[in-house]
Image (tube, rainbow, N blue to C red; front, side):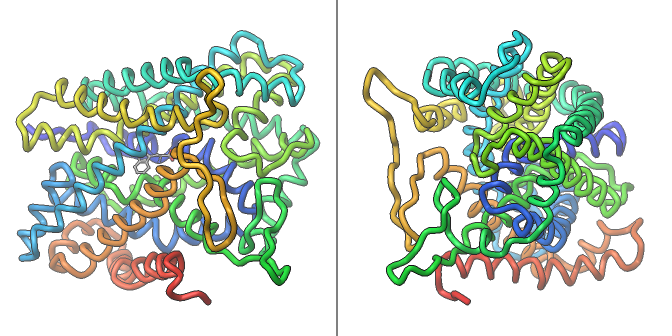
Length: 482
Ligand code: TRP
């Protein structure tokens, strides 16, 4: 018997639970900070509308038609369309991307769990900037601590997924998502009175083209070439597009998987719009909660991945009731991460069950343990991780045309999955939905829709989205620099 969501609301909550996660609250603010604010947000919003929306519609439509894990859905749909079964490769690369993403996602989520306890102990009260930095370093420089939290988070993920779709996912997300929303609003309210709100609005919504298109170092200074000119880079554009995929959980079959549990009589246009709007609102609210505190405390918005572990604690430490709010914030962030983690692992688990006849519990444990191992790479590449006096720097310097960047293994995995594998997966999903599937198969998935939705989607998914993804790709390979 195939599972089906109990109602459309539970589907929305699960899909929003998948979409809203560390990407919105941890990653979005820090990449916005790194790539200069306004123009980055603008580029990201364009990617959401022109690429994210149509591809999410496609994933849900494909999943609902195939009714199986992405690999088998693609197998079935390609046979149905008389196309090569090699299209199922899409499902395979999706499973790989999901496991790779989860491997570092779990390490960060583990840090979030650690911070829930730290916040509740009152350790952030009246901390200085150096104080909160020290608290983060004390966690990241001890691999066995990171490992313990990573293990715990993976165990919890395994536990939820092993309990099945209805038993686990539906129940948790139903109260977590609304709670997260309320809490974010509270935090934004606090941020508005912190004294940095105007600067934050300015930073987030005033375009500064140079900061987006020219390469800068970690200090925010522009890199210069031999002629003392600024160096042009497409990396921020790629990151913006990659993040549109990441934040909407697109490109690896997670939403396809969730679509496969969706009832035939639901309007997928309406569902998609709700999911995308909620996800975007949460990301923008997270920015509005975090950046005012960054500016009010004279911190650097381009601080990178540490933004949420350094700036927010600082704010919690200086506000009335900060211990309580801070604890709640990290706990809810942890739940948001958990509901996303579930969707990263589910396609692989479902495939093992369908194709290998493995029981759900065993399938979940097998996948989870594999992901746990890959996660070790991230733990060892955390800044400052040391064994005795050997500093582990797994990848070290990478020389690019635009200068020398320091990348560690975690950043490499992150870039490779989010900026390359997900857009590539999304590209082929769009091509498949727009060019390979028969029109009447896709049209059927779009019944119960305003009559303009299907033609608009069709044009987007055939031409606009693949073209845009392709253009951004051409630019990375440097074939076409304009
Ligand atoms: N969207 C989640 C976030 O923003 C992460 C996530 C969950 C994800 N499932 C995914 C990313 C599938 C890519 C693909 O935190």
